[in-house]
Each structure stands twice: as C-alpha cells, then as structure tokens.
Amino acid sequence: MSASTKKKLAIILGGGGMSSSYSVGFLKAIKNTYKIQPDILIAASGSAGTASYFLTSDFTKAVRRIWLKEILSPEFISGKGLYKKVNIDYLIDIIFKEKITLKTKEVMLNPTSLYIPAIDSKTGLIHYFSNRDINTNWMDVLRATKAIPIFYNKEVSIGNKKYHDSHKSAHPENHINFAKKQGATHVIVVHNTSITGFWESKILEYFWFRKYKSKEFLKRYRENYEGTLTEHYIRIEPSRRPFANILDTKKEDIQETIAMGYTDARQNKKLKKFLQDFNQTK
View 1 (tube, helix red, strand yellow):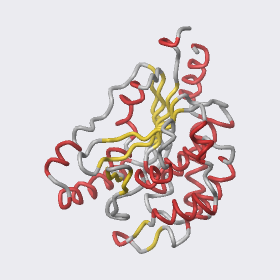
View 2 (cartoon, rainbow, N blue to C red):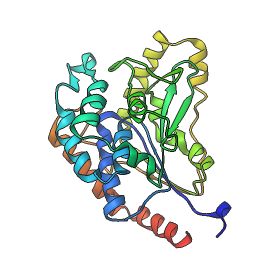
View 3 (cartoon, helix red, strand yellow):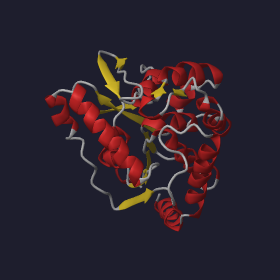
View 4 (cartoon, rainbow, N blue to C red):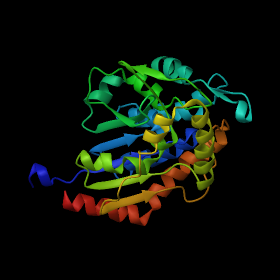
C-alpha cells in the first residue's frame, strides 16, 4: 500500500476538567486490551496531560497516581462553587515537573504524532502544538491548553503569542478536519462530559468572553466550526452520566469515571468492530 493511501488512526480526546479522567480509562483499554498505537493523537485541555504520559513508559503508574492522589490536593483546586480556583501552575510545575516527572523526550520521540490545541488569545482561532516541534517547551503547551478562563484566568506566553483554554478547543469534534489534514483515515472521538456539563461550560465561557474579549476575537472564535465527519468515524461517550464533574475533588468519583472509561471501551461492540476493520485494512 502506497504512502498516499496508508490507513491512519486518529484518536481525539475532549476536555472537561476532572471529568477528563474518563480518557484515562479509555486510553488504558486502547493500550492494554486492544494493544493499538494510534498514528495521531489529539488531546485537549484536561486530557492533554494524560495523552502526554500515554506516550511514555510511565503511563499506567503515573496517571493513576496523578488522578487519584496528586490533583486531589487543595493546592490544585480550592474554594467552592463559582469561587473555585484551579492552580494550573501547581499541576505543571510541581506535579508534572517534580512529583511525577513527565518524560518529555519520550513524548517527542514517540512514533505517535501528538497535537495539543489551545486558543490564540488575540485571534480567537485554534492553534495546534505538536510533539514533532523539538523546540517547543512541552510544559508550557500543557499549561496553555489547560489555562481555563474564569477558574485559572491567565494567558500563557509561547513564543511571541499568548494562548488559553476554551470550550471550542476542548470540544473534540472541532478537531476532525485537522486530523484528516494530517492524514487520518479512521477517527475515534472521545467525549468526557455529559450534555449538562457541555452546556454549563459553554454558557459560563460565553458570558466571560463577552465581558473580556474584543468583538474581533469573538467573530474569529466562532469560526472554529465542528469538523465534517469522515466515513470511518466513531464517537465514544460515557455510558451514563460521569461521576466526576468539571472541578470534582472526590477520589471515589474519579475512580468511578476512570473505571467507566475503561469498561465502556472494552465493552463497546461498535468500537471493537471499528478497530478490527482498521487492522484488517492497514
């Protein structure tokens, strides 16, 4: 099969804060049950760190400790309700750099192409950072995609531009066209949040952007449309409402959500057939 017709599998992981723990279970099943190495991995916001560890030899041990211990600390999420604060700097500088060191060299050398989306704070358009760019500070990339408005409320400088998280960059369907441009022939889209969580985050962001962003930003931001579906496409979402909400700090909720992601991936008959068909046509 020629390079131009080679089959490529892309997995797109959505964001959703602590509900992104669903992606932990999903990737665990992909690695251990299906034993598949995706050609392309796109991971937004809350899933970006998990996806980065997925490309290292520490994946299983590291993400379990991160999700079930380290990020449950009040150093990461503090306060109550709309007054909650998310200390992304603690996540990156203490957890990812020191406590459970992310092996960024392994991320860069992994055969899977990893793309992390974030919003350009000036243009309002999605920018994709790649593990193929060896000059990129990967920790700053993770900081940018997780820089959630309202609860973190900072922009992250990379090069001469600034970036932050957003509802659009965290929504997995918005990255289908980009995956296809990278050569993906088969696409798996993983949602982490319920429809309730989807609308809650969208509404909160709408009012925040209306207050703090320019009209030009809002106009361009709306241009980040959902991608057109590909023939070989499957959507994965929680089989029931996730136990973990966006800023959940209860260990049992995170455990249940990880377990649900793992079980859903293993028991999804459509996913099994989808991956079987992909392997047969490679």
